[in-house]
Image (cartoon, rainbow, N blue to C red):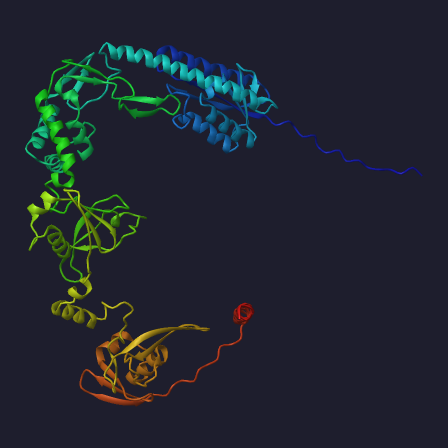
Length: 571
């Protein structure tokens, strides 16, 4: 009889439509480029929607943005995010230059899209990122696109420098105190008054910090509505534009790909244009201000009157950190003036010297080095170049005559700080339980009847975890054993007639407890009563052998056996 086999044919899978998007970009903002971008968007929208196998996923377009960097292109970033979410299968673009002009950015982006299954097609080059030789051709053509961008940048730089040679500024730069009217700089009267105020304050010897505070008090802000800060004021004081002259090419773009701007320190010629616009500050005043800035820079912190400086400011230097020591006052252990390394307050930075220098000891050492009976600031400034601190409590004096004298300081600060007044203050603080770390309501309440010492709280660790005990503080051997805190609290609660120990009730009723022996205690109440009680130490309850305890003990014994084997081998 013939054998019959049944064959079930599955339902044929329908081909899924590809989700297709396009990317367009122009780098120059102009009416012609706007039409070009619109044409690209219309072309790709129509192309995708006409294909019956494609599903329209949108056209992403960046207008007026360079292709050398992808982090500045919002639409490009939005397209990549959509591809990561699975909303795009194919990306169409006109050419490699439209997609990216940076070889690294292009290859990294294309490889990322390839890893998530998204194909990129370049129409002009007839390339696909999924083809076998696609990445090789992309690398070659992307390098050409990047070099083309460099060539365009060089041509633009040439035209810019030609304009600069003719005294024509590159663009309409913003400068506080002026505004542009056509090709001319015109003074803004209210802003010009602020500029003159800043210069006048500097000529009067005021620091930039003082000027900043004055402007804030008057409610005067920058053109953007922000508070005046030190960097803004410094820029006003060093900008030659306020003299009616222009200094062109103060900075330049070092790399056309990264767009990194660099300050011109002689790499390229600068061009000085005289009498190009009305002046707010005369040239003589500006030159004097620049000389004064250089003089104050040489003085360092001593030039800033708003700082609390002394003759030692800027003189004590750390040879390891390269920073100056600064002045501090300590009042936690009596009033002391000290000098510490400038890196002491910095995060994740520790000076290898460490420690501090007592100012009185420093003055005494300076007087000895200079051969004086007492410290004299004038003689110190005239003869001392700087003081180096190569090691803790070691000073290396560099004198202006070329001599180097090394001396060692003896630190007696810990002894000197314990004056009778400070000792009395600390004793009073320690009587307050809130001052001591780990203090409880029992602190200073339990006393030894034999030696008169207070019992202290101790912590011990056992197999059952941490446990607190109260033991006599006499280090000469009082003989009294300690009491476990949980047992002691239960005994106190029983004495007070409470179901459980209560901190408030205990502190309100008990003045102190005298421990007479290991079995006898005398409770002294605040109302004058005294109650003697016999202490019965509770029996220790052995811990049950749980699986967790068995595992820990087994691990501990295994470790001990290994250590014993090592010890025997060494022996």
